[in-house]
Each structure stands twice: as C-alpha cells, then as structure tokens.
Amino acid sequence: MKIGVPKEIKNNENRVAITPAGVHALSEAKHEVLIETGAGVGSGFQDEDFVAAGATIVEDAASTWRAADMVMKVKEPLASEYAYFKSDLTLFTYLHLAPEPELTRALMETGVTAIAYETVQLLDRSLPLLTPMSEVAGRMSIQIGAHFLEKAHGGQGVLLAGVPGVHPARVVIVGGGIVGTNAARIAVGMGADVTILDSNPQRLRELDELFNGRLKTVMSNAYNLRENLLGADLLVGAVLVPGARAPKIVSAEMVQGMNKGSVIVDVAIDQGGSIATIDRITTHSDPVYEKYGVLHYSVANMPGAVPRTSTLALTNVTIPYALRLANVGAAAAAKADAALAKGINVYQGKVTYQAVAEALQLPYHDIAGLL
Ligand SMILES: NC(=O)C1=CN([C@@H]2O[C@H](COP(=O)(O)OP(=O)(O)OC[C@H]3O[C@@H](n4cnc5c(N)ncnc54)[C@H](O)[C@@H]3O)[C@@H](O)[C@H]2O)C=CC1
Ligand SMILES: CC(=O)C(=O)O
Picture 1 (cartoon, rainbow, N blue to C red):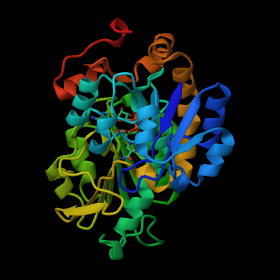
Picture 2 (tube, rainbow, N blue to C red):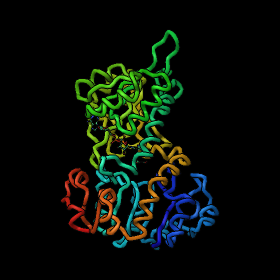
Picture 3 (cartoon, rainbow, N blue to C red):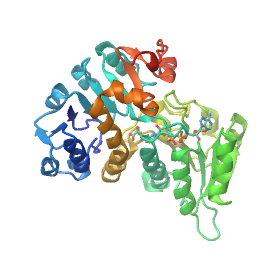
Picture 4 (cartoon, protein in one colour):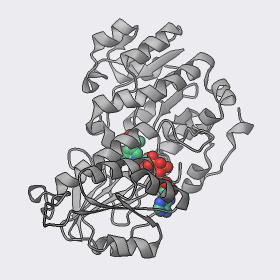
C-alpha cells in the first residue's frame, strides 16, 4: 500500500503523523511511505531521517494525497485539503466530526473511508489513540492556566501555589478522565487547591483513591458546578462523551461567578466545548479572549505546542493500527478488530458513528452491516 503523510497546515501545528521508526515498520512490511518535504521538521525529524528509514520525500502535499491509498495525518483536514478526497482513500487522523458538518459532508460526498483516532475504542471503553494527547493537553492545561493568571499576561496576578500565609489558587477541573486526571496531577503538584467534578460516581471513587486526599472530588451537576465555580481562579473543561458534541455544562452565570482575572482552559473545545461562554476556537498565535472579566483559552490542538513529545507519544499508539490497515486494507482490518471498526466515522458515503450522526442530524448506518 502507498501511505501519504502531508505536512500539517493548522495554525502552529508542528506535529507529524509518522516518525522514522514508523516509516521503518511500514517499509519492513513492504509498504511505500511518501512524506511531504519538511513535514517532520517541527517535531525534530529531517527529510534525511525519513529517507534513511525507507521513506520517499515528495515536494508538496498534493503528491502525498494523490498517490496515496491511505493518508495519515494528525489534525482534521482543513477546507483547502477537501479537494484531495477520493473514493479509494482511507484517511486515518483526528476528525472530531460532531462540530464539523462541512468536513463530514465532504467525506460523505467523496466516499472516503474516514477513520477517527479519537473514536477507536477498546472493550474497556478506553480510547487508545486519544489517550496520549489527552495526557499532554491535561498536563499543559495547568501550565497554560498558571501563565495567564500572571498579571502581565492578563490575569489577576495569582500564584497557583500561594505562599505561606496566603491561600493557594482554586483550580476546578470538570471531567475526571485522562485530561482531568493529568491536569489534577500537575495542579496538585504545584500546590493548588484542586476540586474535580465528574458525572460518573465510580470515576470519583477512583480519583479519590488515586490522589489520596490531596484533592476534593464532587459529583458533577448544575448545583455543584455553580457552587464550586464561585470564586474559582482556574477552570479546566475536560468532559467527553465519545464522538458527541461536548455537553455545555458550565453556564454564563457560573462563569460570572468566577474571580475577575481568572482563567478558563476548555480542553474539550475539539468536540465543540463544554462552557457556554466559549464562542470561538482560538489558536496558538492568539490563544485567549476576555469575557465577563475571565480569560478564555480554547485552542483545539494544544499538543501541537509541544510537538516533539506529542508526535512521539501519538505515533507510539497509531503506528500498530496503521500497519494493520496497510497490511489488509480498512475493511478487513476493521472486521478483524472491533476497536478499529469503532474508529470508522464515514464509510461509502454514510455516517457510521452514532454520536456523530446524532450531532449532525444525519442518518446513522451500523458499520457492521457495511463491511
Ligand atoms: N484541545 C485539545 O488540544 C485536546 C482536546 N482533547 C479533548 O479533551 C476532552 C477530554 O478527553 P479525555 O479526558 O481523554 O476523555 P475521557 O473520556 O478520558 O474523560 C472524559 C470524562 O468526562 C466525564 N463526563 C462526561 N460527561 C460529563 C458531565 N456532563 N459532567 C462531568 N463529567 C462528565 C466522563 O465521565 C469522563 O470521566 C475530549 O474532548 C478530547 O478530545 C484531548 C486532547 C487534546
Ligand atoms: C486530540 C486532539 O484533537 C489533538 O491532539 O489535537
């Protein structure tokens, strides 16, 4: 199979979908890997590194997309890339289709087999291709919050840890999954006063056990959210219902209850965002805006800011799946692996992931009946 890897074009997106180790694994299995020149530079991989591992470097994005049977990317295609879609293409990348009707339509109209990293799901309900980037974004969310809480960066001028004789900052994390747990780990480590809310009582039990009294766990409901956000300094949005639009669980009124000069980092923005006052996606080059005296950060590709770590972490988990897809093709690979089948969001012009179909009000087709 021919595998194309274009350079990412989203704002400040320096990750790349393959490493030299990935090229080596695919080449050993007799696949041909075509990489756009310079695609790896932002992650510290030069064209020569890829060539030494067995790849062919091509001069532009079109040459990767047009020749490929499968394109591997990091972020969802942007509008300028839709022209490359074709019916015999497998696209393996983050897609986040629930808030993306135009992209979904383009995939349906062209018949692309679109496999979303974020909905590949194991029997234990974990999301193996989302987890590493959630670990990165969760850990980043607190350092970003700390940065914007500084006066010079627009915040109220509060140190997360406080100092002896002065309260630490109050950090509220909504959603206690991978992002939330990693955010909590950094916030606790920095000495903040941390509260984490989740709608799953079993998850709250696990968090209580894990942090051994170093944070407070609270059931997520409108009443508790309002109470806990009153006077908060940093809110991290970290909820997820796989594939679906994020539920808007933090209202404008709750945001107004936060301290003036406080900060919101809505990591769940890639699924549409969980906070009512988040009305736009921001970028690494212009990451925050102010509303009700609160700084809002809503960057949908946070791990793109630490591309070396993120590319290595992402490809650690994607390459074994890419190998299986390349070896037998998407349909056979999905038939043999229920986790991978869950990743298929669009197939033969049909939406095959229920939460995406519901979010976009499109007919849903069970992938099992189509393979
Ligand atoms: N902006 C970015 O660059 C990145 C965004 N993400 C996104 O972060 C979000 C969270 O991802 P993960 O932590 O991996 O998901 P996860 O599935 O591990 O955790 C989500 C948690 O949200 C909880 N939850 C669901 N509905 C809730 C509600 N109504 N109230 C409170 N809790 C609720 C679930 O019980 C679960 O514990 C996803 O949208 C993911 O795509 C992940 C990485 C990078
Ligand atoms: C998960 C995701 O959207 C990202 O890593 O950019």
